[in-house]
Length: 140
Image (cartoon, rainbow, N blue to C red; front, top):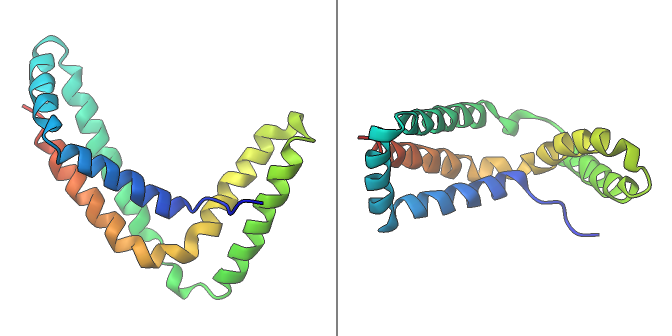
């Protein structure tokens, strides 16, 4: 069975990809388009503002996660990893329970990924800060 995806590494990778896009030459055209659209559709700035607010909330939630003090975290992570394998396999046999299984898998994925968080927490927070700064520069 394949290894479960690591949520925090995936988050870091997605943030890095978005930050790299915002730092690319293409963002100049995006900025010009947003400024031109703002005259026609003022809500475009609202979209950017909401994205900035969500980045702030994401950073706050990541900051709250202090996993270094949790005893037995590795063992719980192993436990939830095994739950993920079991439920992913059982999902095909229980299609009527797919929603409930997905709910459990969502929580299990977070817990399984927690041991890696300390190693990349600062990097994630720094990426969010950089993205927020770049997003603010898009507005007119």
